[in-house]
Image (cartoon, rainbow, N blue to C red):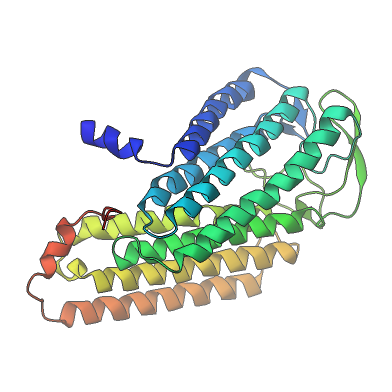
Length: 334
């Protein structure tokens, strides 16, 4: 227990504070979903802050754990993490504030003082979140974190997260143009954009509210943003399996299988973005999309079978079994 607590204490503290704040918002917004019946475009006013808070808990906790383990440019990485933490709190805080006010946080061009000031800060914050993630992704290219599989998982994960944030910029111009709708208070609000492509927002999938009628850039945004959790989970699963499967005890084999997972997931990101820009709903793929999905699945299976076959035929190397006893991430004090 004490070692686990010491491990958490070594995490990036500003990001830990951000994660704690977001976790608190998850609770508050979750209660709001139950007790507050106000809606914006057929969705609870608390749905957006709830989803953003959950997303920032996952991504922020991953960064908080990762950044202290990087050996190079530690001060720069700490600064970038702090920028992300402060910007995240301000941005999601504005989303929560607008929800409490019963009005829109995104695309809202009304000129009341709170919204006018908040929109300027909010729009600047999106650039800050993207910029910090992009710089972290670039700097990860020049250093190794633990075993090769984990290094590539973190590099690819942060890179796809940055791309997922970049996709968010295109959401602003995805709609048919400015339109006026009523907020939860019955006040007319002029919106400068929307999430859906080819169809108006509202009446989407349960929980996510992604459009079921047309394209929605929130889908690739979500896929990209949470790639790092998927990749790190893949590494953990492979390491756990290596305690029972002899041929998985090779770091090289685990790195190759992780690479296949990264390739397949990146293809999913590209396919969902391609669907969205064509105005196609995630749940209504056409023949072209199914072809892309089938090709991705086929290549993934072929690469996996090839790696596994070679690994099983390769004779064991003395001492290779010791790799599974090493910590997932080696101490930064080299």
